[in-house]
Picture 1 (cartoon, rainbow, N blue to C red):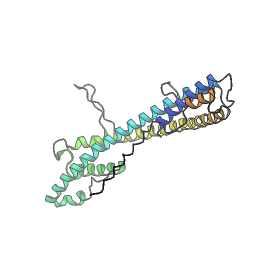
Picture 2 (picture 1 turned 180 degrees about the vertical axis):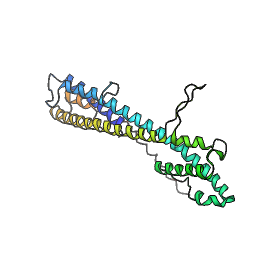
Picture 3 (picture 1 turned 30 degrees about the vertical axis):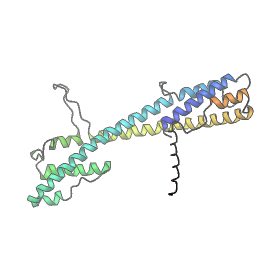
Picture 4 (picture 1 turned 120 degrees about the horizontal axis):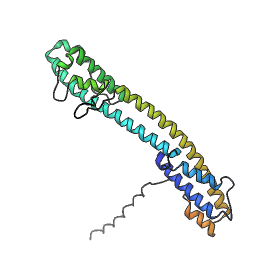
Length: 252
């Protein structure tokens, strides 16, 4: 169960537990939690309440995922250009043997963030030192300065028409993702601690309430019909089994 699903399920359970507890308060109040405490737990799990633990945690996760997307998009661009340019350099090196010692060490096969960055950095150095930097244009959309900017960024030009937005460096993108991931883990830890405590409170309330009010009584049936107990929240219905085939009659 992911974090959002856990929050949604327990928010629903807390609200319904509080609702039923309010309805039966004249007959019984669980000593482990006051109505005000149930209400406070519900607010802490309400993602629409500004500053609630649930809202902070979900927003932190959303921001971390966005930063991861920005970083991966940049690395995908580096990888795609690395593959294309290294391929062209290999062809060029066949006619210029002096390039082979450098080109033979270039690669575009990695599928990891660190590997893609390492391969791209090696290509950038080879492009600058062995192929003349901007003088070598492998093909349309492939030029040294554009590739270099994927690593070192560009300040942009807000006064241009239309304005040219700044391009963050790869290092900035990595740092942003690392920072936001740290915040994400911290806030997930805080809300998970709340979820564990709230889940135990709900379970203990339900266990005691259903012992006191048995099935078949008005309050007992109210509790059992109104308060959710399963953590299998939002799962798809089980697939129906295919009907058995009719047996083939024996040949006459």
